[in-house]
Image 1 (cartoon, rainbow over the protein chains, first blue to last red):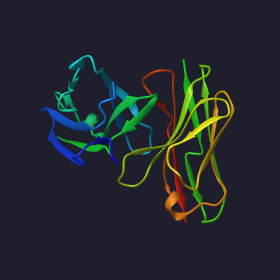
Image 2 (cartoon, rainbow over the protein chains, first blue to last red; image 1 turned 45 degrees about the vertical axis):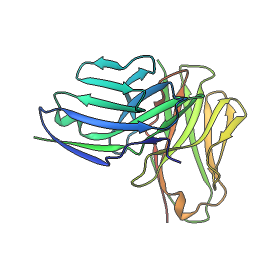
Image 3 (cartoon, helix red, strand yellow; image 1 turned 90 degrees about the vertical axis):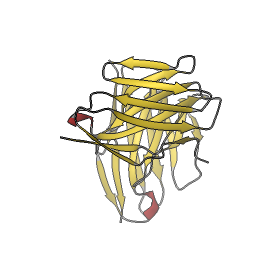
Image 4 (cartoon, helix red, strand yellow; image 1 turned 60 degrees about the vertical axis):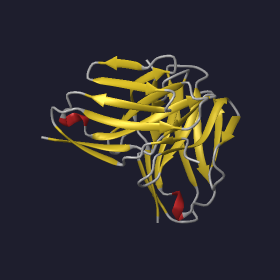
Length: 110
Length: 110
């Protein structure tokens, strides 16, 4: 049972445009949500997070939106840069455990 | 500052051979420790987590085991590797959020 789902395995965006990565979850007990970025042959690095009491969190070019009623979160990157090309994982936290989605490979085209 | 060390970076092992991957954390005490696996084309799957010395919780029944002999040391083991054990293994630590990952071990079972 996949509790956290990223339904788009890949996304291609032109440099300078907005990248929108989506994530859905099923467990209403999750109360904290995170996005990680992963380059090949490296561990994921933490990017941005949001608590369930908020609906938006912004950090520079990165904004995470949370829609609790829809059990949906999204990551917006604007403007997209070539260095943003990586695999992005969303994760949901509950009971001291973090459940990850399958990841979305983002490619930024020049 | 806290750092996490994971080794080796790559490993090629024959089917039926034993496995031992080691992870150590520096700069913090009593962290929660985790082993994740990323199989080809799939997301991050939680294998084991530990909230203290000698305390191991297994998330997925399989050919692997974990041990925590010291506060900041986490070991992933197998007595006999299977082909299906191939993947990218990640150690991580946390004290609250977020989770911090090591650089991973690429295991190829031949």
